[in-house]
Length: 104
Image 1 (cartoon, rainbow, N blue to C red):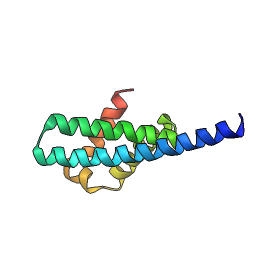
Image 2: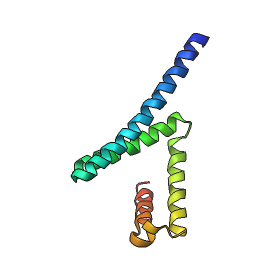
Image 3: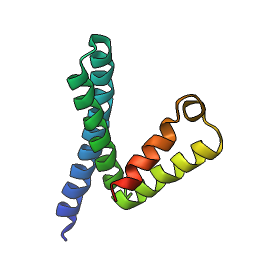
Image 4: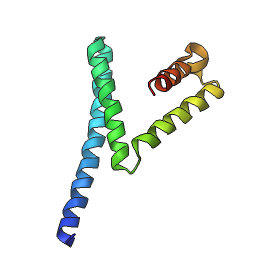
C-alpha cells in the first residue's frame, strides 16, 4: 500500500473512531431524554443504538464481538458472585446472564 493511501486509511479510521464516540455520547443523551419523556419506544431505540455502537467501537479498537460477549459474561458472573446491589436487590444480573446464555 502506498504511503499516501496508508495515511488516508489512518485518517479515515481516526475519523470513524471519533464518529463512533460521538454516536455513543449522542445515544446516551437520547436515552436520558427518552427516560424523561417516558417513551418506551424511544428508550428501546436509544438502548439498542448504544449497544450496537459499543460493539462497533470495540471492533474498531481491535476487540472481537466474541471477546466482548465473553467479557460481558465475565462481568455478569463477577457481579453475581460479589453480590452487586442490582443483583441482590432485583436479580437482574442473573436474569441477563440467563437471557444471553439461552440465546446461544
